[in-house]
Amino acid sequence: MLLNMKIKFYLFFCFLLLTGENLYSQSSRFKWEEKEKLEKINNLQDSAKWDYEMLQKDMSQKRPRLEREGMDFGIFPVPKYTQGLGTGANINLNYFGKKIFWNYFFSEKNGVNEQYLGDKNSEVFFAVVILTDSLNTSPDKNNVSYNVVSRNYPDKLASGVLKTKNNSIEYISFLTGDRKQFALINLRLFDLDQGRLVLIAPQKDGSLRSMQLLLPIMEYEDINEYIALVLKENKVKSFFLNNGNI
Image 1 (tube, rainbow, N blue to C red):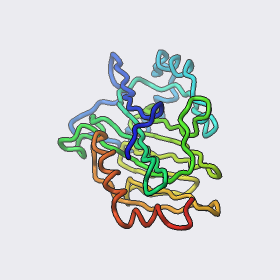
Image 2 (cartoon, rainbow, N blue to C red; image 1 turned 135 degrees about the horizontal axis):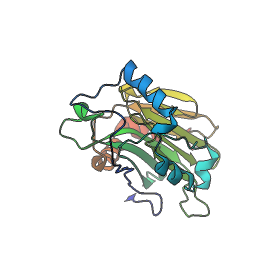
Image 3 (cartoon, rainbow, N blue to C red; image 1 turned 90 degrees about the vertical axis):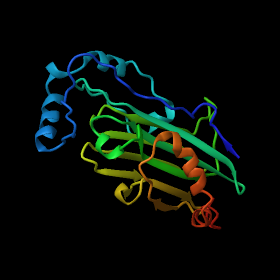
Image 4 (spheres, rainbow, N blue to C red; image 1 turned 180 degrees about the vertical axis):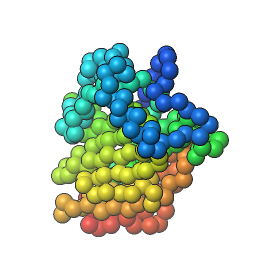
């Protein structure tokens, strides 16, 4: 049975509707080459280019306890930009007697990625599916947290953590303006060119198993249905129902 998470299932867009000129001009074909990369570095170091209103908003944010246990969210000043990112999660509480949690991150269609998206309005740039033996979403005992960060524009960054009874699954993923994409899960590096969908199965002995699958460019509205179908595939069932798994 597929259930929405009560407090941690959410979609949000980090749209920053800013006035004035964008930091980078966007032609019909987005360019992110050496010149643009050097310009970004110079602008990040030039206080005259910073968006101080956004900086103050970042300074006032309160981050969830579990999220703070991972890599600290450093508040760096950045110039103005516009980039819409979002995240969501879902669970299957009765996957052949086991619990499955998944988390995904997506980007809106804009000048950075429009040449790759065609008629799609968004793209999921990373999704992780995790077998778990513990899933508590109450505010005082929450054991899952995730976040997506637009401040690296035109790069995209996402992170999350899920604590099982005896393990902590921690992950970071990114997609750069020139379409380099990787994920780091408990210090294992995944080249997402070989698949944006990663499955993780913690083992009874404390080790981990992974499976990496191709994920077509997909709008976020379709990802839950897609993962539900993936979970029905024989190779995926064998992966998650292995005797060595938690």
